[in-house]
Length: 169
Image (cartoon, rainbow, N blue to C red; front, side, top):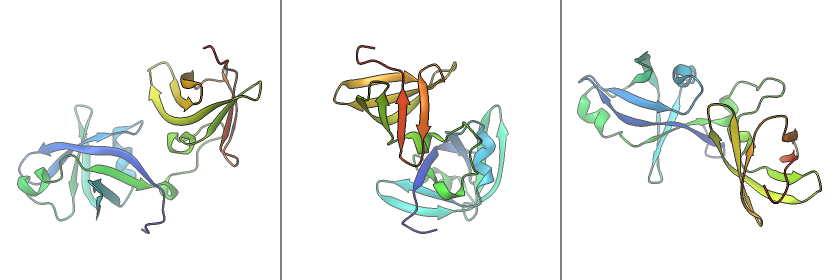
């Protein structure tokens, strides 16, 4: 893995499980065990990075438990609490037609149907019903539901989104 890759935060280490080095993972993926699809992770904290290889993993009570190569006791595992788990963007499977990874939407410019730039996608929120774009710009923060009623086009090449959204929403 190279330093020029785009790294995407996919979760974090929230604690330890047992005495043999297993970790509790808070996954930021649709399915918690999706993180196990990636053969190598980068752990990041306070500007420090470390490559690790998941050796084993399982879900228990909806929680992802992972054993990393070389982490064999509770103390070693405990020292990793708070590290962010990152995956290189290039390792993601291609998105289906009309579907997008959140990491690809962040940073896109959002313009409304009148050609007014509303701002840039800073983040997304999951509400249960649908995802919501958090757009920040000269008109303040806008929360735009990421549904076809409001999102008219997504151009990944130009990094632009056209939304049916007014300034006063």
